[in-house]
Amino acid sequence: MIIDGHLHLWDRRNGAYAWIPPGPLDRTFTLDDARPVLRAGGVDSAVLVQAEDSEADTRAMLAAATDPIVAGVVGWVRLDAPDVARAQLDAYGRRLCGVRHLVHDDPRLDFLDLPSVRTSLRLLVRAGLAFDVPDAWPWHLPAVAALADAVPGLTVVLDHLGKPPRGTDAMPAWERGVRAVAARPGTVAKVSGLQRPGQPFTPGALRPVWDVALDAFGPRRLLYGGDWPMTVPDGGYAPHWAVVRELIGELSAAEQRDVLAGTAIRAYRLGPPRSA
Image (cartoon, rainbow, N blue to C red; front, side, top):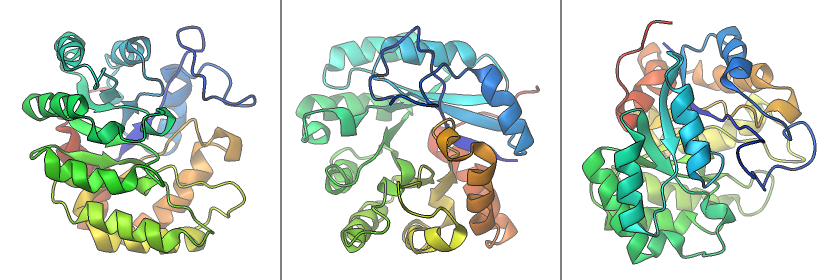
């Protein structure tokens, strides 16, 4: 079984998605667009992940989650307003498996340290929901380890391996930050979103990042994410999947099962697959 732990959908009519640049991403991507892409890659199901800090984006994903190819939804709640967050969590229902906030787009560099945010994250612990942190490097990666210490029981998912600055002299600092996060037992990391402008995307080019992640987290705390449609400008799902699959394929069969499904099931508390 293969679970893609990081897939986006967005409808340009329902949200601003102000971060989307002009070009191939500047259109609507639906589950009907994603389904054949996943099937062609042999992927059984996917976790939908928010692409905008809005209720509209989350509700659209929850509506799509009635399809059996959707394993769960990582949505958005107003973490800096615990009463609002509580009401949203109550309203969203059982298909919600995690929460994410676009911290890299938030002007508050101390967002993860805010008392109100940590109060809301304790609600996630009680609800059995994970918390995804996107694009943590450079500003938020040091705060992720502190957050894991401050909110016991919270499953923290480091998206895109913290967004390593491949090809720069900042890699040692990134590695230290990643290892600090991995030292906390409630943390996992996604092998996803590792493209970097101007850097090659090959197994060899990714190996320094992969080796650090594998040594720090181990296969039982790594999970695969395709990050589609963010891969569309670079050729789409298939070439990205081929590169990551080659690295994962070097693991034992049991370790591959963890990275390709088991870690996602544990981190997001996913139920058994639904029949298509």
